[in-house]
Image (tube, rainbow, N blue to C red; front, side, top):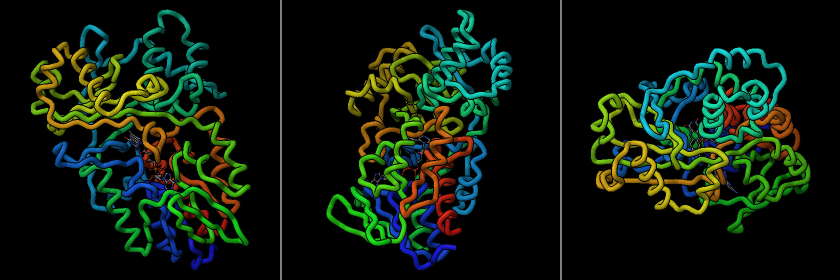
Length: 423
Ligand SMILES: Cc1cc2nc3c(=O)[nH]c(=O)nc-3n(C[C@H](O)[C@H](O)[C@H](O)COP(=O)(O)OP(=O)(O)OC[C@H]3O[C@@H](n4cnc5c(N)ncnc54)[C@H](O)[C@@H]3O)c2cc1C
């Protein structure tokens, strides 16, 4: 067992950091969280309800799959979930149609079921689905890997994504009433109730081990001493913090874990004009296309007239130079093309908007991690409990839905348990 009088510093007040803090504080440890931003939540980023008409999310929005840790936390917080319903549509450059299964779907499922050794998604497609007749299947898988997983098909692990595809992408998805922000508010309040100190605006720049203690230095000059610490910063930021030799030696493993980017755009309109355009679209949720901002979704079954645009994966680098205003313009242009409407017609209806290229966020530098064929081995190195500085966060989760809030919460719990068991 660990010594309950230990002082533990956690870097990052995102889902992983808050969850680990709460667990450790409940067991009697003294816990301090150092958070660079002026708010908790990290990649959970609530937007003002006054702006969008509901508690909108500029970062994480959906609860994917079974998510047992998330669902248990939501029950504890008294927050309910709204399961997703509705239809998926596709725009092929000329017309809008309901999404249908690819004619080669059964063949894809059979090849996935037979897969023994891992290979990248691109190699998997070249090996089994090279012919011209498979071009639409290849295109839709590549777009899914880039868009949904924010991953590069040339590096992404087929085995890691297999479970996602084998249920045809039909795993349950839900939204939290009150958004992910309500869950973070509950967790942060519970942390404080358990005695956790949360210091906002504390950018950690260096960590050193001196005489059996850990010394943490912040950019503003603050210094904190503790017995152990947990680093939950997103992968790209790990190399920006000076670390003691033991922890630094593990960082080579980071190169074997993918980290993708997402651009997310929220547009609130005066009216749900797309439903007036085409009656069938009344129950549309997702809409896929090859436009500059390719994926869109509605709030269905809620009736808020908001469309959310999404662009994920390596090709987001093509929009690197666009600021929020230009991203919103690109989104409006994509909608005009998809719905065959003059841009001005859509612009006239716009009430509120927000856009984030997460690669530009200084404390995220992207959206979330994804698995390469070497990721499991890399995670095993990074998640080891040796040394005084431990790593935690969504990228270290070894369960099915990597890169999610569930992954972050579960990883935070696992790291706290490791400390409490004295490992
Ligand atoms: C646009 C977008 C959409 C997403 N959609 C979904 C979704 O629908 N469903 C889902 O489950 N997941 C989604 N995710 C992923 C999900 O948000 C993350 O996996 C999860 O929130 C990560 O939690 P974390 O605690 O590991 O990291 P973070 O939330 O990033 O927390 C780390 C914290 O460390 C802080 N930090 C960084 N550097 C320093 C420093 N030097 N000093 C001090 N603090 C520092 C950061 O500010 C941050 O608060 C989405 C992510 C994005 C960006």
